[in-house]
Length: 325
Image 1 (cartoon, helix red, strand yellow):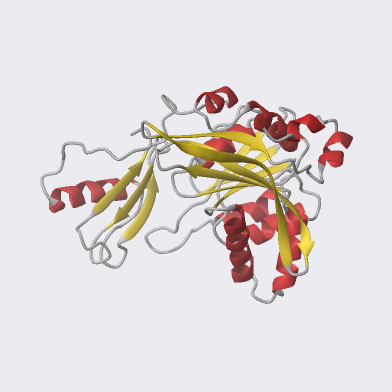
Image 2 (cartoon, helix red, strand yellow; image 1 turned 90 degrees about the vertical axis):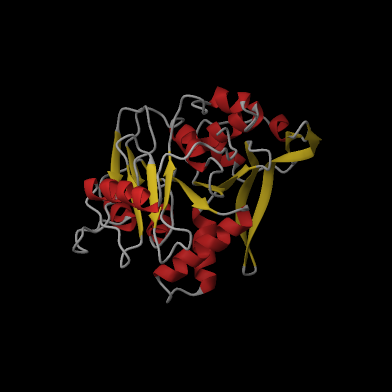
């Protein structure tokens, strides 16, 4: 609760009782959990995620993990994120211009860091007249624009047939005349199709990736691309990524449970066989007071190379925005 673990009274008599509840949920969702299929993922009607692990994979008995997506206390808007200390006004101004200027942006972060919340708020900055194709594994984003089409992947049925993957949906999205393609999270080969789209005129894409730093994000994306097509030379993969991506926004859940954008990094270019990143904004920690991490957001002094490009599409930003605090 509020970013921290909290003990609650147990509501299950024993492992058998918990397994009975798990089986009830699985049956309703057309899934089966047993020793041959000990790990399953499901989604409840309120968009909560359910993950189940049972023996012999789990050595402590059946485990049911429920991740609820409630907006009652969580951030809903740009102002909420400022109030919660996730970013500051300068970062908002910069990112809003980048999104409206149709830059391709990856949101990187670890589990529970708040990537989906940031993606949702970024996506709602897109102008209302644009046609948005939203690709998700589970429906967890809420967009306010008029022309939004949501596509959701589907697991195979009990016979192992009928699966629709995120990659299938990204490929199909390209046929739907999108102004924007938003992918809630890239994990596998769909990132190759997404990079191809970015490099062939489908700009303004947004997606999240599970990684702990902007450099880690590039490394994970590289692995995904090479796994999807091992025949592509590594140098070509990196050139493709450097050409496609403009920004990596790093979201982090800090030790005190707070969530912040700790870096906004420009993907500049290739230098030899390495992709060059340049930090534009960052969070600098100064200490800990009463168990809370203290610090401040600041520009680094680096001027983004795409600043002129933003100005050409009406998204002008003052140079003073990039003056370090």
